[in-house]
Image 1 (cartoon, rainbow, N blue to C red):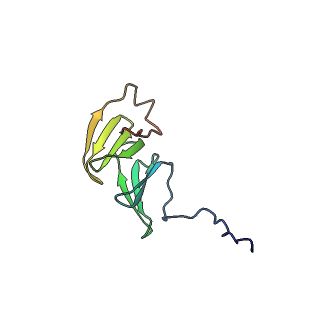
Image 2 (cartoon, helix red, strand yellow):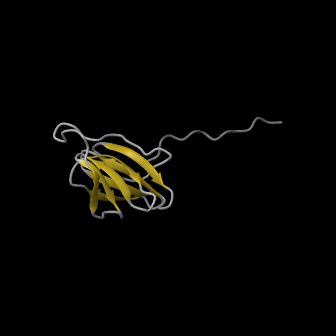
Image 3 (tube, rainbow, N blue to C red):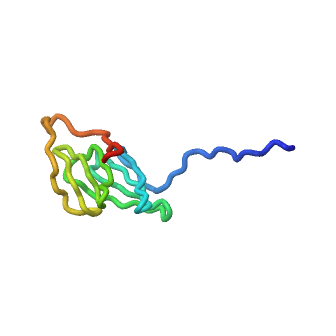
Length: 117
């Protein structure tokens, strides 16, 4: 029996034409079929439709540190000065909590939700 020929591994592939100044906190949104990530230095949430190769940018009032999809839709975001909820893409930000530090010197960074949300 001949030895099977395995496909050659491919290098990383760009999914959308966008360069972030400081990209972090990526996640795949299975219901929207979108790839989300933050550009901390540019104060933006980004999402890519990888089938179409398009990227949408949502400007924020200050640096984001991390985000997660909300079970009922929208996002939960940790910004420099607190935790916020946005019910839709580009929607109003509602503060859920303040963070116990001086936001002039610190910011939230690199958080994720656990299995319980």
